[in-house]
View 1 (tube, helix red, strand yellow):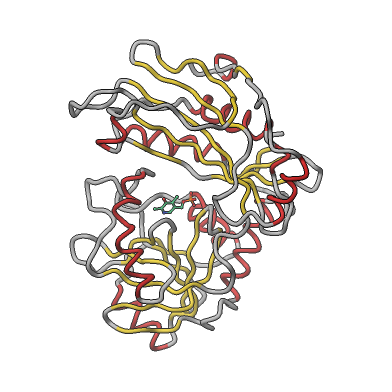
View 2 (cartoon, rainbow, N blue to C red):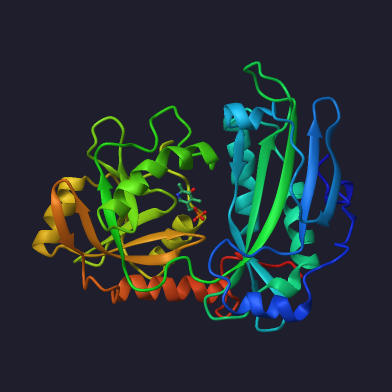
Length: 364
Ligand SMILES: *Cc1c(COP(=O)(O)O)cnc(C)c1O
């Protein structure tokens, strides 16, 4: 079961889609994650039967037994990716194959039935095609795709579910942050992931565990939370839903190494490649929070940024925490290396710059 042909989607068009005039209104200022398209892709899995009944259908609430495993034991994974309208009127996506691979690996970690890459890609592509009129055209706008999988077997015993639902929904979005630099709260009391845990899997449970720390950040007037390692509470790991980079005064970049406790971001990987190809020295190595504060104070730390599909590349202007507050770089986001990497990435993602890496794929 690995060829796209075996996953032919049945189309059940929405009987009453949003009228075009209303859609235009919604697309003018969609915000992030509040507006949804007319359809969704749904594929079911049952042990012994495998993946079956792929459909594109009207987006609607999903019937779920109250004993469904996901509601009790949190067997859930997801992905986040974007579709853009290209200059030629077509639709492009950024490295969708990498999201398919990661979704597969997240499923394996959570003892769920992995979705074959070809099925994952077909579901995303079919949904984008059906709802292509929902792709906004604004400068920072895109159609955010949210593939996810839940354990749907009705059984309260603790074991991997024997049934799953794989669903893709889509949401037209503007910028994740409202602009400028973000401030970051260093969490000393909570950790996100431990060695042997699920930090490298994109599962909802990781987010559930991060929300209290995120709330603490807000309480202290910060936009985002930065997590340290779970053993020594000393090494910078990542933010709640984004990876982190530091730019030093010799022009080099530092980012914490992957190793099971950090989500392997596709944006992170792209930034590593773009930076190296621009002749920058890039080090994937541990960076302690003490060093970070010392470097910010001495001026050795010039810039810092968060990166991920939703946030793209967002400058970090300020660190706050139990050890005090420091400003990074300009403090207002006008940071040259961050800006240039952001521009290079966005140019490729939107099909405006040449793509020597083969990252961009036409999907419609
Ligand atoms: C999704 C995610 C990222 C960013 O990954 P991208 O592939 O760049 O979108 C980073 N950290 C966490 C915890 C995430 O869930």
